[in-house]
Amino acid sequence: MAQPEDDPVVRNHNNDDDDDDDEEEEEEEGEQNDDVEDEGEEEEEDKDLESQKAKLRNRFQNFFSRIQHESVPIRVHDVVIKGNTKTKDSLIEAETALLKDASTIQELFAASSDVNLRLQALEIFDSVKITLDSGPPELPGTANVIVDVVETRSPLLGEIGVFNKGEASSSTLEGTLKYKNIFGYGDLWDGALAYDCGHKAEMSAGVFLPRFKGLVTPVTARLFLQSQDCLKFSSFKERSLGLSLGLFSTRKHDLVCNLAWRTLTDPSRMASSSIRRQLGHGLLSSLKYTFKIDRRNSPLRPTNGFAFVSTTQIGGLAPDSRCLRFLRQELDLRCAIPLGFYHSALNLGISAGVVFPWGSGFSSMPSPLPERFFLGGNLSPVCTLGGPTSLWGFRTRGLGPTEPRRQFLSNSDNENTDPGRDYIGGDLALAAFADFSFDFPSKWLSAKGIHGHFLASAGNVEKLTENAYRNFSLRKFTESFRSSVGVGVVIPTNIFRMELNYCYILKKFGEDCGKSGFSFSFASPSHDFAGDLIILLVIVMTFYFDMVFEFPETVKRTAEGYTSRYAKSLARDRQTGRVVC
Image (cartoon, rainbow, N blue to C red; front, top):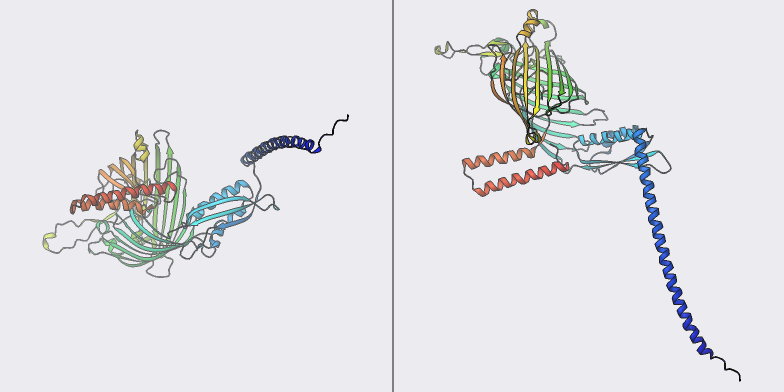
């Protein structure tokens, strides 16, 4: 008997179950294979990424190694300027022109650094960022330079500080209010008030144009009114109203034209005969050229390097009979020698100056009184660069040729009264100094910059005009040198550099105004932020009102809290570079 055939439906059903199991197994195997493939692809991508990073790292290493050992040629394709909204593109393009002159990577790096400093020196940008980027792909060996600037938020700036001016015999307290970039040409407009311990006051206003009409050097113009009281030592007052025009100025050279109407008066009516002859009005029209090299590592406390300044001035350029005609020459040489222990250094300096009239009969004419040389004053010779001015231990205008004052009698009881003598200055001046500075063996004092120094100075002034040169003797001139030695402590602050010295006069003559003892001197070669003065004024006013009006304790705490917060804010701004002091 034949076997019955299997039911196709039943048979197909069983087959479907088997097929489903097979499909599920295949899907699971496919998923596992896909996961393996994905993991493999990820591993390959990671390997490719690491390989690319390694290649890029090697390229950078090879590039930096190459630029360190050889010149890499490159050409600047374009300079892109960003961020300026008020400042003219022409001003920035003029300051960045030297970037396109670079022919190697090394020259481009140096030029970029120089351009950054130039743009920051304009004082109209809060920040300057220069980025080097590759040039177009179709131009290999080229680069684009991107100059990104941030213009200053506040165009108004106030500054105050204590300064040393080469022609002054004492420190000058000066306050300046500046307004920046009014017309977008980097122009700086300012007004200033200055006063020094030599009873000299000045009020001035001026403008500074870094790039005027495409000129390479900046142009400055300044209108000034000066007043100086010299009654105590020389029985005259000086007042000048004039204009100073800076014609040429670079790092080493400076040419200035001065035009001023000068008036000399004697309110005391006791001036000596030589001073009375120069009272009245005079016109000053002069050209002044200064050549300066300063390779010292610091103008406040130099420990290495040298400096040299030569100043030549010729007066009498205007065709007027009242024009002051004279020739004036000053030389100043400094040298700082490091000694290798306790941050010590030996500073040596020598300065000389001569003034002489010119014109018909010049040998018998006197030199202009304000242009003569007067030694003495409270300046430190270490920080004063520009000619013979100061001498430790002697007062301002406290040595040199003198003449008896005219005796003015108001009644017969004053017949035996000595009116004193006038210091009339000299036509030839020579001064020298030596300063040995050293750190104290205290880390705290060294960190604050407080240090000590031993000092010595010598100098002399002599008259040459009105035929006095015929009696001049070099031996007599050197024998009559005044000299002093001393020791002191130097305390630098944010507003000034203060010296407390004890000076001992080694040699002086009967009419000289100098004595042994303690003395103070103040100096600072750079401007300081006005906020430091705000702190000082708040402290002084708080103590003053506390003593006079007995202010409540809450007011004193408020002032002290403001001072503390402002000091912390100022310190934070200095660290971030927003304030430079």
